[in-house]
Image 1 (cartoon, rainbow, N blue to C red):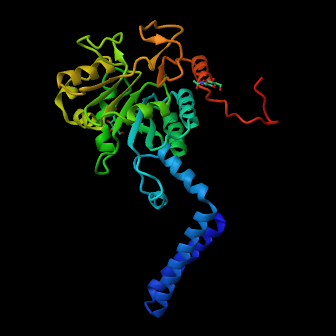
Image 2: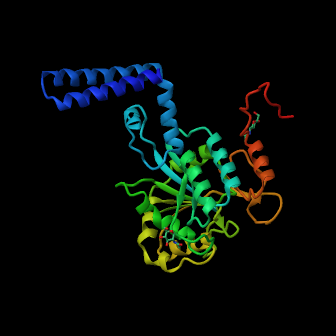
Image 3: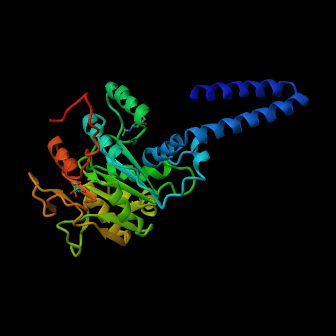
Length: 333
Ligand SMILES: *[C@@H]1O[C@H](CO)[C@@H](O)[C@H](O)[C@H]1NC(C)=O
Ligand SMILES: *[C@@H]1O[C@H](CO)[C@@H](O)[C@H](O)[C@H]1NC(C)=O
């Protein structure tokens, strides 16, 4: 069927080109025929393959790149309701961290799509520096299209987060507000998208600063800020970072703490949302932070998944793989 569809479309467009060369009565017949053929094919395709359309829109909502305007998705638009909100999750990564990126990508791909929300997960790093990266990272982009490369030299506490937030308005410039919220996350944090979305859905869309209050969950600490495990800013704050002087002039230091300083000095981010105790550090091992505890059922995000064992423990607890189908081809024992 897919093959027939392509053949028809090809033949029809050939006909239209032919007709355009010789304007005549034939032209209007040809155009009518083309329109009819196109409508019929679309109709047949939609009736026989409704699932393909649903799949496409699901994929768009989960891992589409910036608001796309492909003909297929615009065809689908009337059926797909506008999302309640759009969230970009930028996971800071390093070009060479192929294995971790692969794991984290799988973890998010395996989570079911969130209804009425658009959540885009992207990996963010600075300039490539090796020839092999130019091939291996290109391959990832061709397959997954989920990578953002900023104009910077790789660093952790030397302005990468500033570059990330301040580059977005230009990178995503398509007119209007591309996202309602933007998150910066670490690649050792596991977010459960369904619960994250439920918590965000009812929150303010302006001047919002969401995460886990640090140090030690102390709101009253004058210099408190949201832990770098993953915090969310509303889009107006992202735009502010891109243009304001305070952030531009003060980029060096622990990135999460620096973010808190910018906002406090500018009296911004007044809608502070603290997600303790459903955002926390993994209990075992180091470091012994004061916001680490056992895994809990309503977890939004758990941090310090520094190795595969910890990832596996968390994923098992959250039933990530219970859907595995039995097969003669493998066994898990
Ligand atoms: C990053 O790469 C771009 C494009 O090649 C280049 O113009 C820019 O100078 C580089 N930036 C740094 C900090 O190396
Ligand atoms: C995982 O599945 C078990 C068995 O169905 C259930 O009791 C448990 O609550 C689930 N865990 C989470 C975190 O949802």
